[in-house]
Length: 330
Image (cartoon, rainbow, N blue to C red; front, top):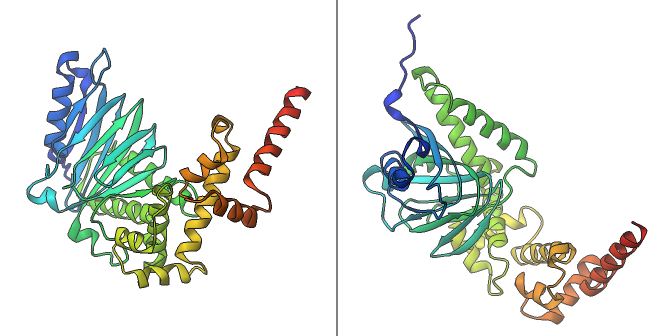
C-alpha cells in the first residue's frame, strides 16, 4: 500500500517569536492575509505582538488554531474577496476573554463562547490577556447543504458551548480537531477532518437538534446577548435568526414555552445571578433590573417574586445576612 500524500502546501505553522520585536505586528498581519484574510493588529506590549498560528486548508473547509497574548485585531469591511467572500466562519474561544465589537453591538466573550458570521462585515476583536481560539471556515454552499443550519447574515453569539447536554460531545470534537492539527493532512483522512468541522458547527449552533430546536437554540443565544435591551421582542429575534415570527413561535411552542416567556425567564435568572454575585453588591436592585432589560422596577419586583417566591431585595438581604454569619463564625 502506498503512503498517503501529505498536503503540506495547505498547512501553516507560524509564530511571531521567530521575528524581531519591531516586526511582529507586520509579520502577524502578513500571515493572516496569506492564511486567513487581511486584518490590522495593535498591541501595547513592550515585547511586541506574541501570537502563533497553526492550521490547514481542506477542499471543504479550513481550520486554524490561534494562541497569543494581549492585542487587538481589526477586520475592515469587505476584507474578503474571491472565494473567501463565500465562507461561513466560526470563532470558538477555548481560553481567555475577548471583546467583540460589530455594527450590531458589543459582546464580552469568555471560555467556551463562540460567534458565527460571514466574512464581509467589519469587526474589532480585542484580547485583554492570553488567548486560545479555534477558527473554523466552510464554504457557504457546503454549510447550506445542511438545511437545518441557522441562516448566517450577521454575527450570532453562542454561549458556554461546553455546557449542557451536548457539551461533552463538543469538547470531544474540539480535542479531536486539536489533535488533527498536529498530524499531517493526508488524502485518506481529509473527509474525516471536514466532517469534524461541520459537526463542530452543528453542535455549537444547535443544528444537530433539528430545525425547530436549532432555531430556538439560536434565538436563546440572541436573547442572552441582548438581555439589556428593553425593546427586545419577537420581530427582532426572528430577524436575527433569519426566520419568520410565526416560525419562531412554533420553535418555542414545540418546547412548551413562548418567546416572551423565555425572554422573561432568562432576564430573571440573569438578575438573580447578579444579585448573588459578591463583586456586584454595590449595584442597586434597580440598576440590576435595568441591566437585564426591565424598564419598570415595579414590574421587575412582581416578576421576581412570582418566579422565585421572594422579592429581589429580600433575597439580597438574606444572602448578606448569611455571609455576615459566616464571617462572624470564621
